[in-house]
Image (cartoon, rainbow, N blue to C red; front, side, top):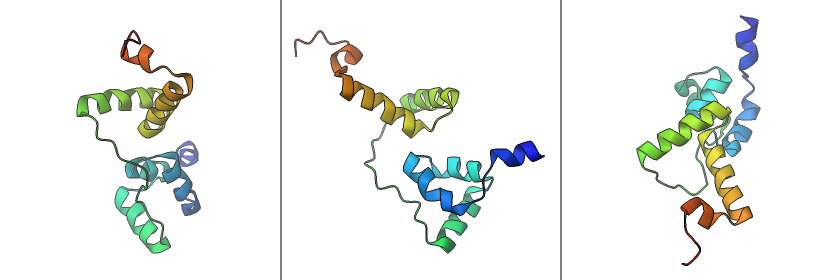
Amino acid sequence: MNDLKALHTTDPALIPALIQEGLSDSEIASRMGWTIGTLRVRCSQLKISLRRRNARIVLPQSLFDKLHQRAAIMGVATSVLVVELLTAIARDGLYNAVLGDDGAT
């Protein structure tokens, strides 16, 4: 039982940091050891907004599923994986390599 408790944290002060990390409501609730409903009620009581201020990109469900599976294997939030991938591509100029383009365009 103590091992299970160690996997969860119930300190609401951590919620803004988890939001900033890009975790979804369900991922935050799981991390806290709460249901999504409990998370929303506690955030409302504490005046913590669960709204994300980042840009939203709509992905095809099949692509999202693949990214989500890979993120789970890596132990990170899907959004964290996506940001890391895009950061590496932009930082290292890997657009052509990733897209299979010979650079002619």
